[in-house]
Length: 512
Image (cartoon, rainbow, N blue to C red; front, side, top):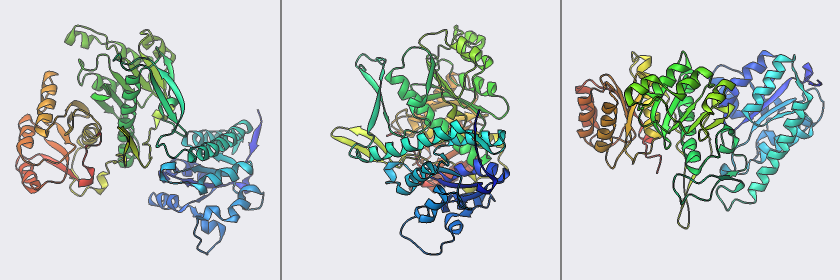
């Protein structure tokens, strides 16, 4: 096996990241290996917030002048990337911003120069993980084959970008079509998955199907919804706790009917998710952010507890998605030919897609709006009580994420207790939504005393809050707003329900 050497005098890495938080994971590891880190301004600022000091590009170049273009386009960068001078840059970690935000000339130029100079050129988090692994394992060396693959990949990314630039008249210009099976309705034929260039590591085309028949339109639509919810939850916990718990989402038609998390063992989250609504999950979907072991697969396959409740031990899940499946799990879950198993290692650390726009096809064109990329940050919440139990805070995060990313007809309201989703409902009014959620929770035998609620829209009156109080809710998450906000706030205080009021920009209705 041959290695591409990283000479000590050339241990300089340049970070230019669309999402600067990506640097928090990799910069400390490179610093530990003796690397000198140079970064664009946004990355330097983000790292400094966590006490990690790095060198800004203009400082590294020794330039004082102000130019109408980023310092990464300065001629000295080309010198550092294509020659072997003393300040040569040996590694570039460059994640470009999507075409919807503009033409990232600087980012793609960096990739081109690094590839031309035979540098270690990394354009995504997955490959950066592999680079770090090899540097740690091989004494600051990487395999020559990896370097060559990364260079080819950089050229492909550049090529795809400029090809897409020529097709901007279509918001999501499709490059590849995958034929799908007929959906649950006869009219869903033919159906296709149309992928776009640079769709990201969690694009549906990046999932490897390990077992089961060809997926249908409904499978893909449901999986997409679950990916978004998983990403929102993981980002929320990472922002507030620095790490994410084990998370299991059990859903039907892309809407959560069970969700649970555990900081200890993944099996706890599986049990909590499946029994949120054991009747509804029959024939549904499950997604996790942890590997499916044979033990977990047994839980997903059948349950004697379910048999006692509903007279049938089998869950009959139609789709299971996870970052990894052990062979024993594939053999067990694969016994049902219509059950599709989808694997994507990025689910170990899933993140939101930061595209600037989302599109909805309408007659004659598209509707366009910014996507809902909101993530809770409890540190920015002055009305969060300092003595609130961690389980309650985590339950609030679950309730908020589910309420904001469900599609039951608007005005979504979710109920959570002990980090387990009990029910969620929606309707033409918040009163209808709460009535539906309460009925679903009670039908499943859940005790609502001390539970957490979340509503994706403000309460215009106290009628809906009165229903929550009578049900036994003790905590809540709801956005501010409405002409009667003070009256609603006083009602919760009088009922001794501790409600966390979010800024108005956190209002939901995200699924229109």
